Length: 178
Image (cartoon, rainbow, N blue to C red; front, top):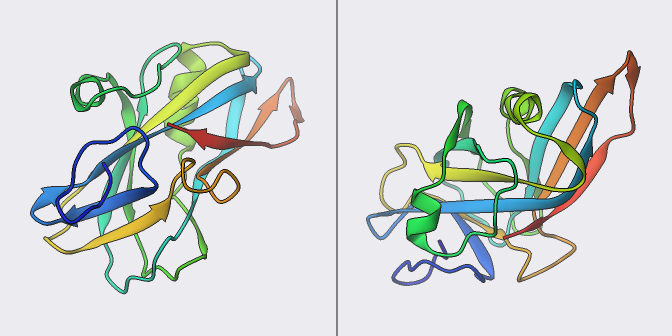
C-alpha cells in the first residue's frame, strides 16, 4: 500500500507505508528472490532492513508474517495480498522513531523463516515473501520506507544466517522485489 494523500493499493509504489494513515491500516508485502538455504538448516539470524524515506517521530506497531507458499508469486492486487496464506509464526514490531536515510532492522524473523525453510525448498531460484500489517497503530501513526521501485540499493534487504551440517554458512543478503 503506498502512503499517498488517500492511500491506494499499488504494486509499483515508490515508498512503503507502515502503521495507519488517513484511517487506513497500511499493509505491505515484500518479496525476495533467488534464496539458497540448504534443506534441514537451522536458521540462526533473520531480519529485514528497511531504509527510512522520511523522518517521523511517532512509533507505529506492525506485525510481520511469512507468505506460507512454496514459491510466492509477485503481489498483483489487494485481493491477492489479502488471500495469501500466512505462517503460524509472526513477529510484532514496535517501530522506533525514524530518521530519513537511516536503516532500521525488523525484529528477529528466525521463527518465521525457520517455519518456511522446514516446509519448502530454497535451492537458488526460490522466492520468499513477507506480509506486514498495521497492528493497532492509531490514525496518523505511520512510517515511510524506501521501496525497490524507488531505490534498488536502499530497498528492503533480507538478512539470513543459518547452520547446516554443523557449520555456519555465509550470510545471505537479498534485495527486496515486490
